[in-house]
Image (tube, rainbow, N blue to C red; front, side, top):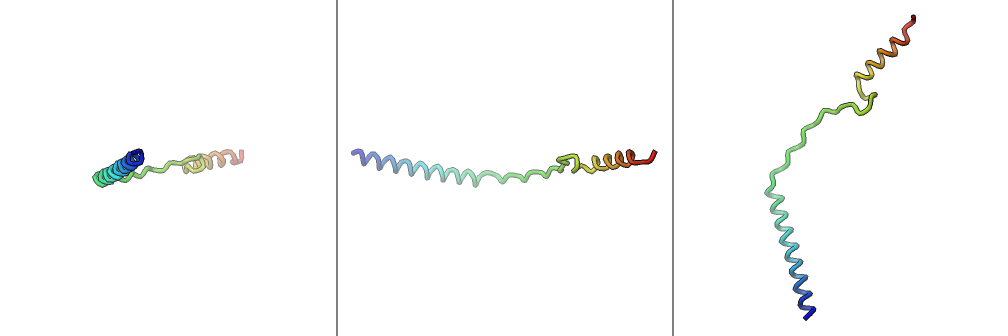
Length: 68
């Protein structure tokens, strides 16, 4: 009797797993394709990546090195 209940329980679990997998694949097919993310403008990460910072630094160095 115990063996019969065990076999029935295993069959029920297998059927539930298959039904869930089938429903999941149907839902994936019905979903619209996601839009690609818009490309973001890359900003400088560090000061030495920023061209404006480097220009200002060059100006400061030239100003400090000029003969008085």
